[in-house]
Image (cartoon, rainbow, N blue to C red; front, side):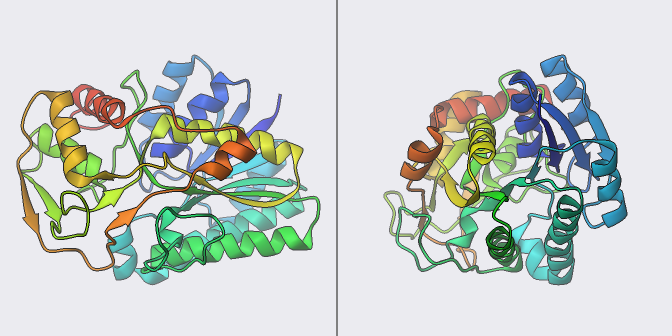
Length: 336
């Protein structure tokens, strides 16, 4: 049975991935410092899976703390989620983002090298496609970014690619996520950000339970079917399962692979909103406001590589995603 270190394992995508790992026979070691997650998520993972795991409250930038985890556990692979992830905040606090995300990854990689761990799956993002590539996004397209958060992903992809070239025993999988939404069917774990949400679905959820007054839709004059921005929304459970396929590939192949995880289909803000209204049975108040700088009209994935290389494809449709999001917030109006 293989031991997988999951950094940021108490977060939204991390917690769902931990559930899938445990249910598929892996041992997991979770490392998190709860900077944007809650300890309750760990109890919920245990409740869903009826399985236990080792946990370390460790900061990714703490090299000695990270080494302690490798010292005390034989780690076969790392799934690396830990990092700051709010685009707007990254513009306000670039030093925090660069030092946490990039330095943290370098400390992790130094520990992996010291303890001879040769497999890593990295949580990257479609943000690395920047503003100038045509849709659908293909993995070979040039990367760029419009904010410090995006640049941390671009740089970490580069670092991992370079390290992989220097060590032919290393296996690196760079997973570029599109827009994860939804929640586990149990309603026990879901997206529970600290403070006012940055992402569309948690914001809609908080309007639905009366915590926020209305949804601001940024821009209704894009060249899209209804004028609002189009994104590739993917169910977080589909995304979590993608990590299992990536792990299996990493254990069987060396080198670096970059793979999109999305549905290949775009949905507009209003389509998501109306789908959620159908799920919760009530109208969600919204108003149009100015476009946000750095936002693009459309963003969706070419998913053919994931299908070919990993034999993975997304299974859930938009109505299932919004229904599961509503189920989570309905059962947890105050969050975890």
